[in-house]
Image (cartoon, rainbow, N blue to C red; front, top):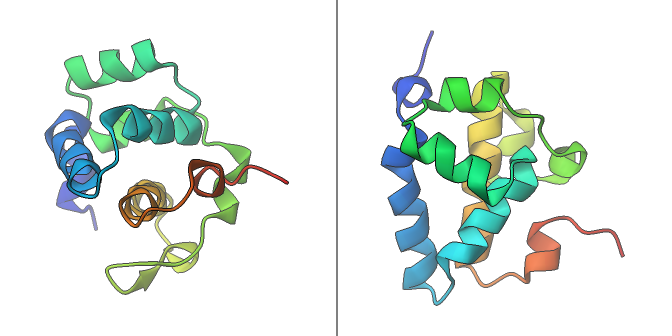
Length: 116
């Protein structure tokens, strides 16, 4: 079963991520930092993805997830991200979870799972 989000352009959802962060006093730069940390993209590559309106499916097919992404745990919409079975949906949920943590005021080094 293919979820509608898979074919949705990242650029269509991105403003919602930014708005969620900004409502809580965080910045678009922090949202971009999260995207880049999770995907290994540079800021310029992220901008190209947004400009080209790549779908989540194409976006995640072209990036190498951060090896520390497996450390992302917790729930998004009542679903534990570490238990999501579909690999693509899990990557999208990882992103959602990181943006949630940003909006909840977590320190960036904790969000980015920086080792102590």
